Amino acid sequence: MSGRVIPYLAGSIAILAIVIGFVSTLVDRKDFPTFGTGIWWAIVTLGTIGYGDVVPHTAWGRVLGGIVIVFGVTFVSVLFATVTSYLISTDEDRDRETHELLRTIASRLDTIEAELATIKDASHQDVS
Image 1: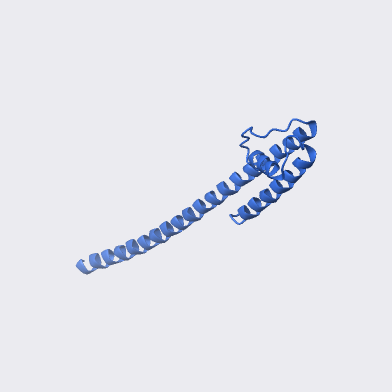
Image 2: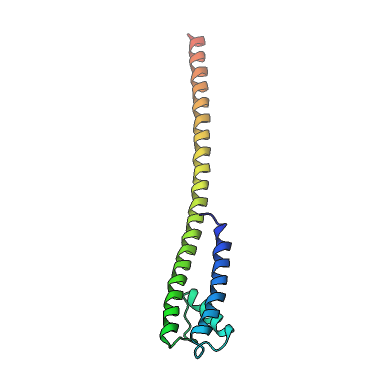
């Protein structure tokens, strides 16, 4: 995966937070009295932070909370894997370029050594 997937992940998590915020106000009006409170709780839970300032107490609120936690952990894992993959890919590209440069230098050195050997042989023949 390339770094281009990060905006899609961020957009997906933002949409998911809004949907979850709305659903949380429908499912547990006591613990999530406003849409803003529901979104705040969704963002904090999806981000795996969990401040504890807003907590569901009803069974359906806790079910929703469990689902949100799983989505949050999955999102964070995919995000870290994507960033790590991108960094490793960048390092591999740099390594590939370095190896190619070293091969070119080695080839040029071989050519120089061969020419020096030819010159050395020619000078030995002139002396003889």
